Length: 292
Ligand SMILES: [Zn+2]
Ligand SMILES: [Zn+2]
Image 1: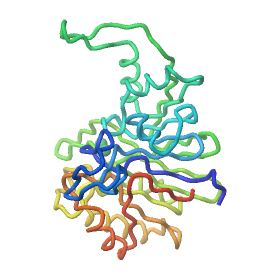
Image 2 (image 1 turned 90 degrees about the vertical axis):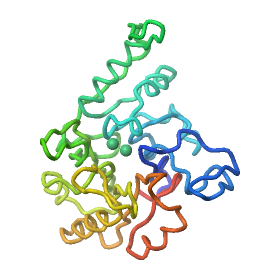
Image 3 (image 1 turned 30 degrees about the vertical axis):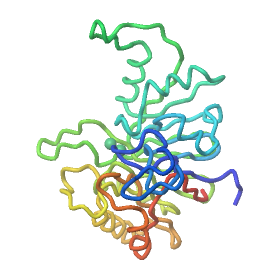
Image 4 (image 1 turned 60 degrees about the vertical axis):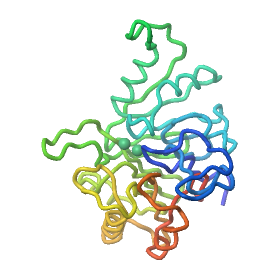
């Protein structure tokens, strides 16, 4: 492989992820952390696509942990405006110290949130927001599902995730995005924060055969209501994977990844990794690298 062409999982947690690396010897998921990169320690979901792209951003610490410098990033794709995936203030703070801006791609909520955060500050004594001088220009490209983008040397297609949808009232509270990435012969699906794949997304995905597919497996072995959660457990993940195989969406040696793993709901890494592996599923961990 060209050693420039890889992806690295900077965080594989869910909404209850770790904000900071825990001190050595602290107990995590019932397992004593021998070192700070114990596989049970999951930070906010974020993916580095070499050499200069990030999907979702919580903070620079996760990049620094793997030696990725802020200034090496040029493109930031945001899936949706949940705090484990998107931190407008942190993005603006990083951008203000860089020689070049990051181009941010995301939905309209992401655009509005960055616009708001760039000119407001919370004032605790007046208990209201106050206007501030804009400190950095942040180019934001609003992305619609179905839209194709050229981002550096990578082709990107945005699709709708099945997330934040009030099933009873059919209110899509925010348009969460999943992404397809193509580089050379390789194709990657990044499908976190989604319950079962929406039909319009299935239609778009049917044009691809994936080398790597990263799926939501937030709730592990826990039983959940598939229609309310906006996420998957392992049983739902298996169903989604079967559906993908039946639709011929995977290359023969495709790598299927379970990601976005809840700290409180899911068993420790060592207790579930083999069972998943027997089903052909790779359990993601922070720092995991795959050729792409
Ligand atoms: Zn999430
Ligand atoms: Zn979410």
